Structure formats: C-alpha cells, structure tokens
Image 1 (tube, each protein chain N blue to C red):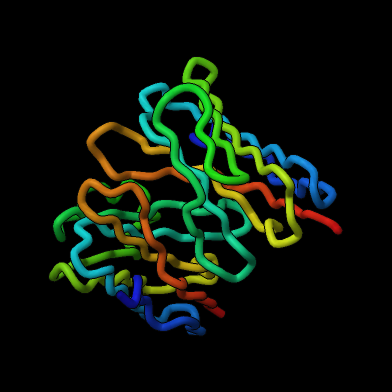
Image 2 (cartoon, rainbow over the protein chains, first blue to last red):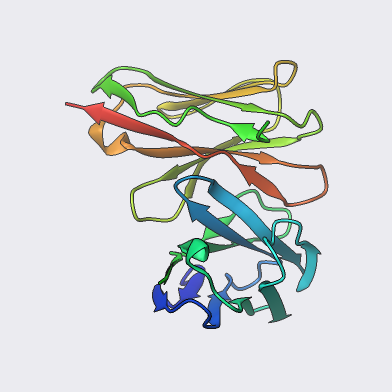
Amino acid sequence: DAGVIQSPRHEVTEMGQEVTLRCKPISGHNSLFWYRQTMMRGLELLIYFNNNVPIDDSGMPEDRFSAKMPNASFSTLKIQPSEPRDSAVYFCASLGYGRTEAFFGQGTRLTVV
Amino acid sequence: QKEVEQNSGPLSVPEGAIASLNCTYSDRGSQSFFWYRQYSGKSPELIMFIYSNGDKEDGRFTAQLNKASQYVSLLIRDSQPSDSATYLCAVGALRGTDKLIFGTGTRLQVFP
C-alpha cells in the first residue's frame, strides 16, 4: 500500500484566497483525521471522520475551515478565506478498524502571505 | 491547563545513555497512550502504545504508565544519534473513540 497520500506537498497562497488540501487514506481504513502542526501549538486535531461521517469537529478553528469526506478514499480540508495565521503543516492520518496505529501522510506545508 | 503536557526540551544525552521522556495528561478517563517519533520535516510515526499501568518494553524502548498520577514516560536505552528527533506523547481521549490528543513534543538530541 502507498500509505496515506496528501496533496499538494507545499502550497503558497495569498491572504484571502481559497485553499483546498487533499487526502487519500490507506485503503480499508475507516477513520480519518486532520491535524495542524505549528511550533507554538504543536499537533492539533482539527476534525476526524469515522466511516466517512464527521464525528468531532471541535478543533476546527472557525467557520473559515471546512472538511468533507465524500467517500472512503478521499477527504478535503478547505480554508476560505485563508489568513497568514493559517500557515502551518497540515497532516492527514488514517486508522483501521480495531487497529492501534494511526498512519500519517507526509503533510502539506501551507504558507499564506 | 493543556490536555497533554510535555517539556519541549531539548533534552541532550550522550550516545549510549538512557533518555527519559515524560508526559502528563489531564483527562482521568483517558484509556490509551502512545509515543510517536517525528524527525525534522517528516511525519509522526508510532513507536509504542500502552493501555495498562506498569511498564511495556520493546527493544530499546520502554513505556511506563501511571494512571493514578496521570503520567506516561518513555525510556530509550543505549541512545543513538539516530534517535535524535521530537517525541510526541498522545492520549486516547475516550474509550470507544479514536480521538488522539497530542502533546507539543520533546526534542531529543543524542550526541556522539
């Protein structure tokens, strides 16, 4: 298996623009997580899905952030409009049913200027 | 109070020594505990998990859990320069959910 695949790896955008981050979880995994990592706040859970259904979105910072999982093999995290304080590395991770290890993608480094 | 707290470090130890990494958590209902390693510019990868009080050993790594004190630690024996990384403590928030809360990590430096 290719592991969790995220795209793009790097994104530079101007303040106010819409940004869409993409994630393909490991085939057969039923839980998917979106995390944001910064030096100051570490790794923060934004939202997680179970069987394509959002279970907990309490970590989503504000209405500018939205996430979808239209099917078991694809999820998006959208920021609209983006702001400089959104600059961070965004990780997607997936977990198989009854398993212990959540596997992380390589991350998307987002820079908003 | 943060849900999962770690000393940011850096923790510097000489090659061959024991590195001790510590983590405290605030939710007494937490059921599962994990240690992830993250090299600079890379994604986190799981090293160990522990569910019950006591010690769990895997090679050079030992995880220790004390639920009464809400304390988790990771010992790395015979530390190697390749162990230099940031170590993230993660706590499973509630039984029956997959939600993991991470600490901010401790940077470990192993010098030759």
